Length: 621
Image 1 (cartoon, one colour):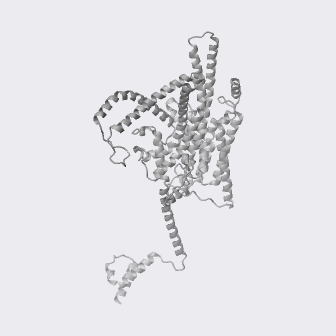
Image 2 (cartoon, helix red, strand yellow):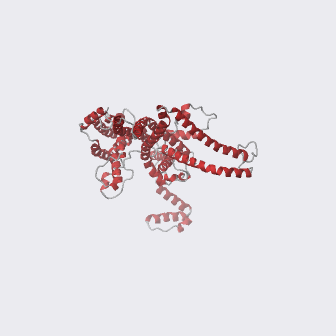
């Protein structure tokens, strides 16, 4: 086994790929910027600046390109999610802090990571920009070409050097197949956009309508609120009750879909990297274990260090097995967290839509707008990082638990010490049972002897009113010293349970792991709540439906006004200007009421004098 790995690593060391993926990332900025310039030129600005500078030469071109609407986008959700998945390898590269383009001092590493994040985002910007651009034909051609470049370069890198130094054979395939699959999906998506755009351009198919302001599922949600509820609820299946129930009136935004897809791929890559590191550590431990075994064999007579060496050898062997066995449950735990986070997002959003905020801590029931706006940008990246770190913490925790179970139950049976193990297990179980029984007995005695009877038969509990006070004070006095000793155990159990739950739930942002009053220190939960409020204020179906009705009414009134004006312009009657009509009415008023002529404001001019003479002549006559 060792010789095979060594042969594979020696083979890989001689492999020189013609493609450097890190260098290609830098050079990919050139076509990325060209694509951005082309799409920006086609994008028209809504408000053109009226200034006497050179900007008027550009007209209203070079508008701002939106790669993805992070708030309230429900179209092309899986396409955006797969586009996020195509960035997984570079995200893991940033996560491992492998981006070092220049030599910066240690204190400036945060700026290095910031530059790296901007470069990765700029390199993958055309994927999102071409998916969201309204110029479907041009964006389809540019997106297909750019995706094809990335696909060919990545595939060439995998084919030339499929083996690696860490995992051995087919290491590059194991690392890059998710990105290749995502890029292949994007190629098919852009090809479909190209074919559909050509059919529209040739007149074979009608132009698809723009993204509606009110989505279908939002309208269905409002209709469901206006309907009367059924008299009898529909019976749910076991899957709907225990796991998940699909709701046709709710859709996850593109941001949540992209975050989940990217988290899945990054978790897979993180597990592969961890396994590669374990393989190296295992080789070193195998060498150490072999040296210990040769030392034991070379020592004929039993010495003082022989039992200790055997125990160390056994610990190494058990640790290796436990670490491998717990990879699957740790990964399944994090995968279940990703699905559970989506379910909690839907549940929390529906509660906010209905006006319910009591499920949130009091401090987070009215977050500041600036925190919510910042949270919408933080959440996706933080969720991925929390999942990766959470997997590592859960893996370590499960390995420790499995190690305790192995030394407590498995190894005693292997070493023919099953009776001693059962005896110790029985004594420990009996001790814990007695302690718990005494605690329950205190509650039973308090309920039976030291509380007054129920006031009515309808009461479920006795009132909090003392009875037999003298016996109660003696009961407290004698149990005071025992409860001191009992408090030592409960304190340790409290610490143990807090560590277990805090470590187990560290990957989840939908709930805080801080105790009440200190929730503000949980920045991850703060990002979750801010993101919820941002989506609540911008995608609430009732609010969006109300705005849709206002816009539809305004559009209808403008259309009626336009139709009325068109009908007036198309009428056969001669057109009379409002000014002439006003003058004619004024003349008619003055003729019928000649006495008010003297009260008119004098105005020099032939027309005013002519009007006065006409009115006076009519009065004399």
